[in-house]
Amino acid sequence: MDRPCKLHKVNMNQAGYGRFYRDGKRLLAHRQTYIDAHGPIGDDTIVDHLCHNADPTCPGGPTCKHHACIEITHLNLIEPTKELTANQINLLRHYESREQRTLCANGHDLAANGVKGRKGRKGTVCLECERQRTARYREARRDEAEDRSRHLRTE
Image (cartoon, rainbow, N blue to C red; front, side):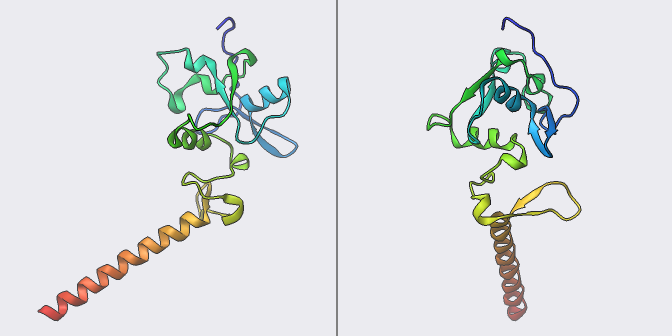
């Protein structure tokens, strides 16, 4: 890299990405830096940090200093393709701001299924994931009740 990283340190999300507010919307700093320099990009387009890829000593994750980098020469677009694995796409989607997400981590369409806030906690829950979790829970409870009644009948 010809230039050092320029870090956005003011407001960070849990993953270590810089963020700020513009016109009442929360934006990821590196995405907005790229948009300001080059124009609009698609919602599913990933802005990659070349500085991270070039640093073999970086541990990655929330402690990665490169997540906060907004040096325009370090930012590169990645168009989603079949070469990206589902895991890579989900990992990248995890770091998007909530407003930019169109799919949950399990691939459900958030616009079609909806989301709800989590009682007493931060974040949101995909309603389809919640329906499936509830169905699994009820099935497990039903199985436990059947096992108990069978056990009582055999005694």
